Length: 244
Picture 1: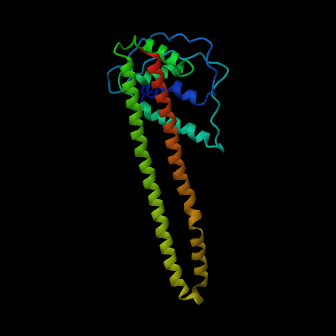
Picture 2 (picture 1 turned 120 degrees about the vertical axis):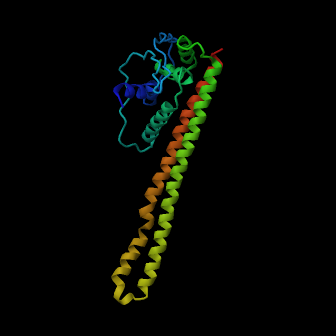
């Protein structure tokens, strides 16, 4: 992949991604001005280029680094949301729609009614077909596609869990069978019997961490999707309230 392709694939949701690691900020005292109209539209090519929107001026408050571990699981959720945003980037369609307006609003500091309206007003200069109806239709479409994507991912994880449970059941059955055979000749197989019994006693310890990890990944994935979908719905609600 070329450098230009890398930039295009990683640039569109930077503002929304950055907000994940920002603390909740007080509402701005003054409504921010709309960003200047971008000078370049997406091209109708196999690899879309993204509309350039002015980014907010950097302040001393930068996103904190991601901790390696977190007792409350919040870091895992943040990292999962980044993966969900990456899925959204792949779902992004040609032209200017809800996706670009949402991200442009985030670039102004926070996704709110006035930032959504300012982003909409600015980006309408780029694509005259942009409308409230288009925003609602495309935003709803992205949310639905995201639901379909996570549903497929969850099914894959559930299949993985079922395979692990089947392997555990089979291994327990095999060990019990071996133990029965060993006990029939216990006098000369006492050492082997003790080893197999020890293995049987550790079966749950062996498989439980893997099964719990799979359950946790499913839960975190669904939680991340729920949060992003809630963000989309909130934005759509604000669009309904503020854009005519």
